[in-house]
Length: 65
Image (cartoon, rainbow, N blue to C red):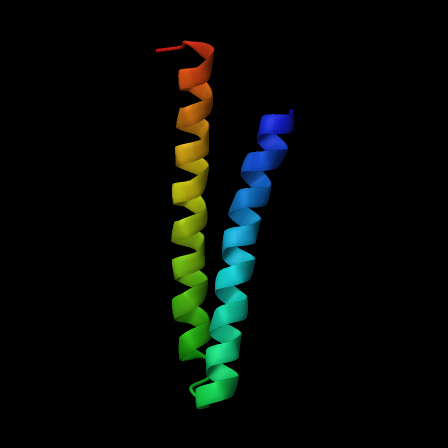
């Protein structure tokens, strides 16, 4: 259960950080909503990559195939 919470928090954190950076760029450059959308998608991709990496590392530690 702890692994599930960690993986879900990594995904949510990636999306939240991407959305925050995109919102900041939009406020700074007045390009709303393009920066928000682009960085939200980048944050989602980064979150998925982190989840896959963490899930794979967890299986290697247990000795699974």
